[in-house]
Image (cartoon, rainbow, N blue to C red; front, side, top):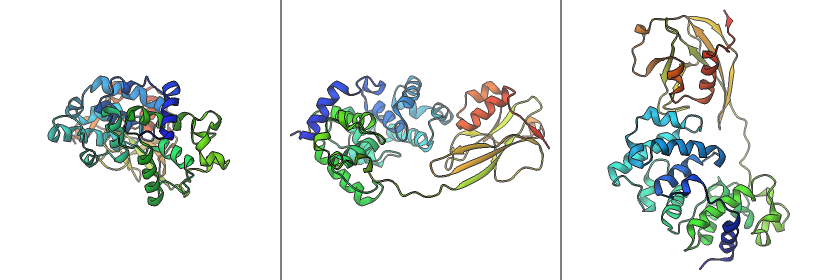
Amino acid sequence: MTDAFAQKLLAWHEVHGRHDLPWQHPRTAYRVWLSEVMLQQTQVATVIGYFERFVERFPTLPDLAAAPDDEVMALWAGLGYYSRARNLHKTAQLCVAQHNGDLPRDIDELIKLPGIGRSTAGAILAQAHGLPYPILDGNAKRVLARYHAVAGWPGKSEVLKTLWNLAELHTPAENVTDYTQAIMDLGASLCRGRQPDCEACPLASGCQAHADGNPAGYPGKKPRREIPRRSAVLSVCLSDEGAVLLEKRPPSGIWGGLWSLPMNDSEPASVTADAPVIHHTFSHFKLAMKPVLLEPISTDEVSDRQTRWCGAEEVAQLGLPRPVQSFLDEYFSGLVTWQER
């Protein structure tokens, strides 16, 4: 039986929901999975272009599994949270090895795979197969927390448990594909974090936060803490021919698996000039990077397979962190201002 909450959401979604997102046509488990992972911490408008380029190059899960790591990371570059891309690639390979080249339909098996949590698994099963599993992404958390006036930050286990119970309560046995999309769409369009449009919301009449006149008070905010600051040195090492030396970042840590200018805590001895500091903010710290120009060296002096010499065209084809890519674009365009030592 579909409760009143779900009925109102479904009626609203039929008229106002999003029905033409690229991962909805066709709505396969592979495409739903890709979109769900890309949408973590990222807006729909940003994801669409990345998704379309990704599925054009890797139209099926086995295509993704067989792809070189560098190509996967290059197509992901700019989306951030790069562990998502590493987990996508790893999960695709596991599915080929263990699940006949497809995502399993069993929720417990799905959750065992890298980068797939309970909400992502629920979305895959509900969206691709019409199975009645709940989701609890950021939008759904906000809708449910406001409708039921669930106090507290969802990062706390007791708050999260309450929200999961409510998600299960309202998820219908039928029309679950549309319902799942509806609760995400409502949270993104009307029940947004700031300035929720309660007057247009189909759930307003039963929403406790709206009745209390305090929808913005739910869900509770994450406790604030000061974001630490770090610094690093980016070494611009040139060959005699003007190519720049790049190194592959370790698989874990910031920008894991991407190519970047060599990054160190201190300056090398052969610095000849430096450029203005590049500032970049991650989710958990702020990083100040100082580019330094080193004396040119012969390409024969570098033979490590984790490093490579690249000109402007080669750099454009690799997966680089956005701030490093922007710096190198300016460097090869002659726009970087160097201060000689």
